[in-house]
Length: 90
Image 1: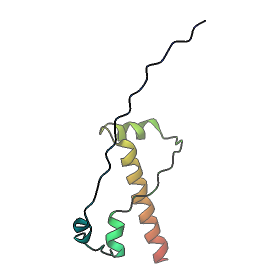
Image 2: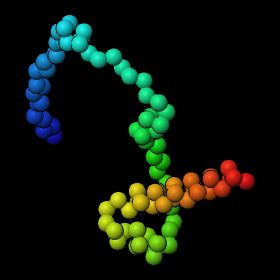
Image 3: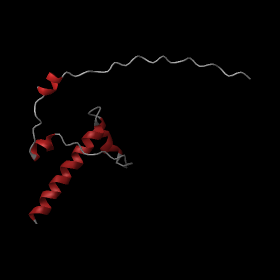
Image 4: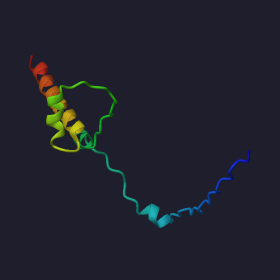
């Protein structure tokens, strides 16, 4: 039995970028950001889980269209923050 010969892939030539010394000298200094400014860009890690929800609850989130998982996450986060405030008060 003969093996089918594959099509060879042709690699594109890569061009190296050169940076002039004047461009490096004009680069602005890095700015340090305060904690509130950094928190604006904070993106928590996502974890894959299996979650069982009541069918009517899931249908309610899904009826608004795409992004229902993000909305569920937002609702849970809001509840979590409210409970954290209550714990701090006690």
